[in-house]
Length: 290
Length: 344
Image 1 (cartoon, chains in turn purple, green):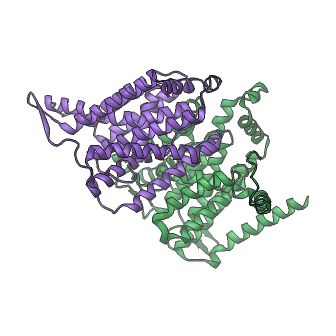
Image 2 (cartoon, rainbow over the protein chains, first blue to last red):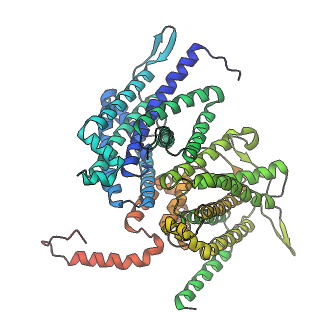
Image 3 (tube, chains in turn red, blue):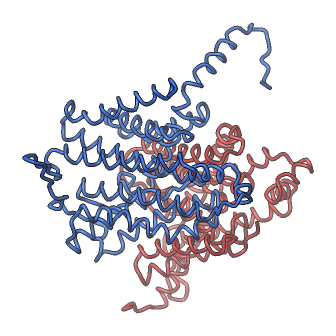
């Protein structure tokens, strides 16, 4: 291989992997909730993620709002946009598969172009979440990645508690497991769909903000993010939250380790091949249920 | 022969004659390039529709085009074979790859099939970029001096390099017409009915003794064969292939989405839908080049509007106009105070 590894490299690779994994989890969580409750693949989810990042950019860089406040505002506005998408575009379709594919892909084209046209050209980046490296016994770790990991962890845990402990969360879980059964218990599937879209979009927006503070922003960043999202929900099992978390961590770490050894291109290809293999040979994923 | 059939035949002949005489009217080299692209995309979209006939949406189209294009070009460059042969080989190679993938792919359905094909397209793109020694890597593959050999018919020499594009236009046209004819015959034969039965109700079809898996694999391989062929013909037209991941690249995932768009806009239920959709859409695209940046916005909007207001696509326009007229007149007749009945 010709690569000599120091402790620094190993730790950094793992931290990078965890950080990317956290971001992927935030995207994949939304996708998996939407998929399990509404039974559709939200092709515009990557664009929702991109929109979240650009909202933060708009507030924080262009208008000088505090970064963390901007992330919070972005989360809520994007959640509202998710609600609107569900109410205006998705609810009237009534379960025709082809229509969902067309509407959500159409939506992603619209959002990409709208953002492309509303911002000036040039590289854009969000300010760092927390500047500088952290010195842990001689190994330097960038603080922003730690913050990203913590935020992702926090939100995931919050979602998990919401789904397991609260009335609405349980209703959502029930609806995901059996739509008709839940309907008979008085759970309105439309409300559940709306909630799924709102929560999913909000999480994606935070993911976008984290991604935007590490990478550059551009209107097409959603495509790759979407790809990662579906990769990890397939690995983790469609519709399973612990599966999504584990899938995200595996994907993030695998990618950064593969990139270390084979270059970043292979870090992209191999997970995709892995996913195709998963879909074909073990469609239920690691933690999957039907 | 009934009257409508005769009318259809006449329209079809008229269009064919028009398309064949087109270079006499517009001999501009750029426009001919556009027409070649339109012809190829029509074939690609028709192939996508063929897969959709079994009820699955494949978004790997761009990837299979890339496979056909690259393999044809590489067979020619590395092995020194004639482009006429390698175009066919490109198509066959794509078909072989498709055949290898088809069985595992068709074990899954619906959304998961979409995901798998989509990812496959991406994998092909990345592999083309990654295998630098074989494919030239990210800078792309250029073979400007490599064109199909000229054909001599009497004193007339047909030169297929990019000097005028006219011979190549005729070649692409004839190729696409033959391919479309084959697809059409397949759809309107017994086998087409079998495919239809699979889409309508696969359990029932199975109970009647249809081997669903074999049929799906067959249709997928055929569709990918034509997609790959179109990619190969495209390759020897532009003489430069690239695996870049920008939406401008024809092998990018966006092309698959655009094919979906053409198909849905034209109308999925009819064989002519994708033809009309692709031709119309690509022409409009060309005529509005100045709006280049806004184009995806327009496309997305049209796609959504079509799904909401014309689920049968442009081909169903004849049905929609009376319906809309009825709705409009019904609305205007209502008195201002009257409440509208929403359950209609």
